[in-house]
Amino acid sequence: MTDYLLIALALLGVLILGTVGLVAPKLRRRREPPLPTTEVETGAEEDLAGPPVEAAEAEPSTGILVEPPPAPPVPEVPVEVPVEVPEPTAGRLVRLRSRLSRSQNVFGKGLLGLLSRDRLDEETWEEIEDSLITADVGIDSTREIVDRLRERTRVLGTRTVAELRTLLAAELVNALDPELDRALHTAPKDGVPAVLLVVGVNGAGKTTTCGKVARVLVADGRSVILGAADTFRAAAADQLETWAGRVGAETVRGPEGADPASVAFDAVKRGIETGVDTVLVDTAGRLQNKVGLMDELGKVKRVVEKHGPIDETLLILDATTGQNGLEQARVFTEAVDVTGVALTKLDGTAKGGIVISVQRKLGIPVKLVGLGEGKDDLAPFDPAQFVDALLGAETGPDA
Image (cartoon, rainbow, N blue to C red; front, side, top):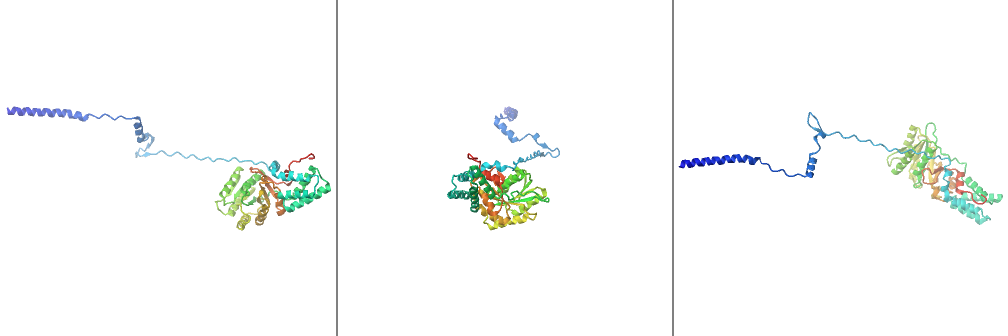
């Protein structure tokens, strides 16, 4: 009996073990359901995965990915500044005569009104003198003009406005000494360009006027190189370069703070190499009472003259400074032998008589006058045209 019980238990154990063996593998093969994915996560996975393998080239020998070569840089195309053609200088003063309207109030209306009075007594002549002195004609020049007018009106018995205007114009032109040489000496000699040195005090509009002088030379058919010898102001060299670029001229400049004489020397040297007609050298503005600065200006002149003599030294004067401009001119003349004056800002002052003062006191001809802020508002000076503009149109019944 006991043997049968043992056999039955053994069979039961075998049966249980067999059943477990069949069920366990099925349980191990069951997979967990996949987690749901979203469009955002899918896109993120693509970003992390990077670009497709086809975007990179693989070397068959090493299997190392090689980055594609960078695109060649696009060359910058320089912006070309259009070259301007300045208007001719012939007749420019006539075209700009309206700019002298303030001075016309003194000369044209004021003086002619006094001269045309019924009775030219002593008091009237004193008023005429005061008007001329107020216009910066200068005391000595005023006395000469008034004395000659008194004599001529007495002898000729002149009374009409037209006749008085003619007499006054003749005396003013005579005071301006029409025989003075007012031509700019800018023609090359023996293959060497003419050298024009521009000097002046601070604030007279020197660099701007220097650029306008370049336009005057180009308008008159000269080829020009500009030397930026004002090395103490970087803006001055940049400004001069802008003026030069407008007329297709070259600028020679040095680093900021460089020796002005060296830059001036290099400018003339470059002018000789390129065969231009004129080298225009802009110097630093300076005060006429600073001895050291004036000595430096003399050095610029001496160094430049190693190439040859300077043909023209042009002093830039501000007409609004009045009689003080005479002192400026005198000191500059002693330092560098000024040969001509460019008188600026005549359109903004009623004191056009400063032209007479400069010439009578110093014997230096006014060669150019500035009558506005426009780029072509610098005109060659002509005494007869200037006086005609100052006196304005003839008026009155007898005109």
